[in-house]
Picture 1 (cartoon, one colour):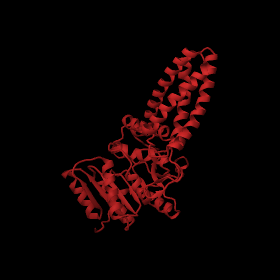
Picture 2 (tube, helix red, strand yellow; picture 1 turned 90 degrees about the horizontal axis):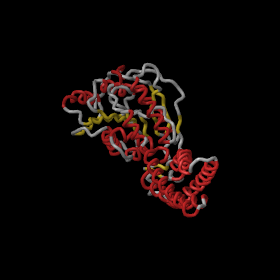
Picture 3 (cartoon, helix red, strand yellow; picture 1 turned 135 degrees about the horizontal axis):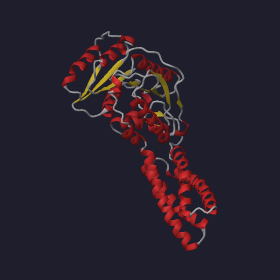
Picture 4 (spheres, helix red, strand yellow; picture 1 turned 135 degrees about the vertical axis):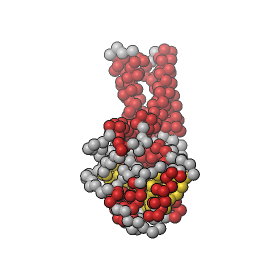
Length: 381
């Protein structure tokens, strides 16, 4: 088992966590990545190196994503086939919680079910308002954008089975966005996830947190925002053609059909290439599924438009109301059904479960406390 800890300007708590892990499990390996912390923190890294951890160094700060990838590259090169636990360097992940995630990885490996294990906080007790509000916003936005619920979207304590390490390493994004992208792409890639409850620890009012509720929530919502933009383009095309055709022919239903064929073609192309980035997957399968969805939405569209206009609502207003109602349904179905991974799709070195059926388990038990500073036993490198 390898523990990877990205560290930027860490405090003395890092050494306590490293010492505690070695004391609890002498067979564990720890890789600490100094992400350009500078000479002022050389003593901290020398201390953890003296305890037996491997320290990798960036000449300048490159962000958490780069630090994690550096650690993953080391594991793939030197410890190929080993599972990985990632933990933060600020002391908010206790030794017990890190080991709890490691034990969950071992249990999954024994069961032959590689699963991304997420150490999730309950956010109960005395939690800083900034953190409580940030998690509430992020959790709701994540549910909307990803299509599944996660109780702690900001967790850096994660257990990565060896079969999934290359897939995790290759996900796009930098800094905070990288860790979010891993979570956002799990279901589509067919990666199983489950939560392990951990203690909610905040030190110095959580001053070390780099999460920005507004900016980072917008990043989480990017797929949904792109989908909204694509839908807006299709809506504009559809509306212009509908008005033009009804003015020319006076026939509502044929005009709806013709306008929808053109706008649906535009929408399919944009969603496939830009929103869901499914260009490498089977286009015939996607096209058939999209056609089924489009037919269902078209039937709903006709029913709603006909009903609303019969009640005296202007055509343009009826169109706006109808599209708003169908927007959420269309996004969810396209994400999971139309552009989701086909059965048997492979990512990295393991055959993953198809996206729509990927499972996620929520926490079912409370946690006990074990401070990272309880052990200070050194280990020779």
